Amino acid sequence: MRLINRQPGVALKAALMALPFVLTFVAYWIGSEIRLAENPSDKLLPAPSTIAATAERLFTEPDRRSDRILLWHDTAASLMRLFLGVGISALLATILGVLIGLLPHVRATLAGFVAVVSMIPPLAILPILFIVFGLGELSKVVLIIVGILPFLIRDQSQRVLDIPREMIVKAETLGASSLVIALRVVLPQLLPRLIQSVRLSLGPAWLFLIAAEAIASEVGLGYRIFLVRRFLAMDVILTYVLWITLLAFLMDLALRTLSRKAFPWTEASL
Figure 1: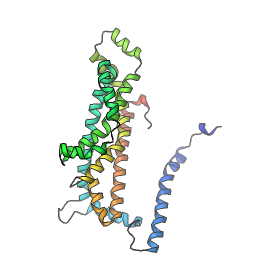
Figure 2: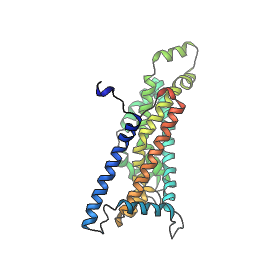
Figure 3: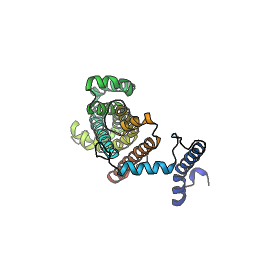
Figure 4: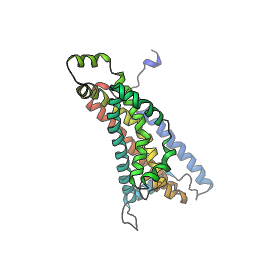
């Protein structure tokens, strides 16, 4: 049997999935032991036990000045910004994607513009966003929208264009209007792709959020990471990085589960 036809069993698949994580942890642990053996005060690669103790403190102990657990406070602020940015982008992408993909006049007007805008590096216009929208919450949400919306629009409009023309013609033959075709033919086929596109956009969305928080914010996961970097508090930084990774994984898992439950025929596996 060829290798491309061999499927791992459940136990082997779980072991193969865990292998990269185990190797990464072992490599870090060895590197940490080597550095700490040379310099017990080294802060660059803190021991895993130190990171675990720091994580326990960050998750449970309130700040002395504010009497709040800063990690949870930062998490709430960052997730609110992220959900607003991604949610608004998904809504706008669905509307504009349908219009561009379904209406030739709208496609002729906006398709080229969206393609050009998608090539602008979002972080390059971050100073402009701060000037126009200020240093508050709005500029951070707008950066996420500017960063992921063009990709979502192009992906959604292309999905509409990929719908077989025969389905549109049959709906027209039955007397369906453009609005009915959009709602009853296009939208049901667009939503599964939208979930997958949002999943792929989560990584860039987190990147833009952390960048905005690091530059101009008083609360948030990105703000806290860049605040403690001046003290070389790698145990705090790594705790926050691992926490962000876990949050991103849980969000991706939730979207994947939603896709499989709501649209089982798509067999989403990304």
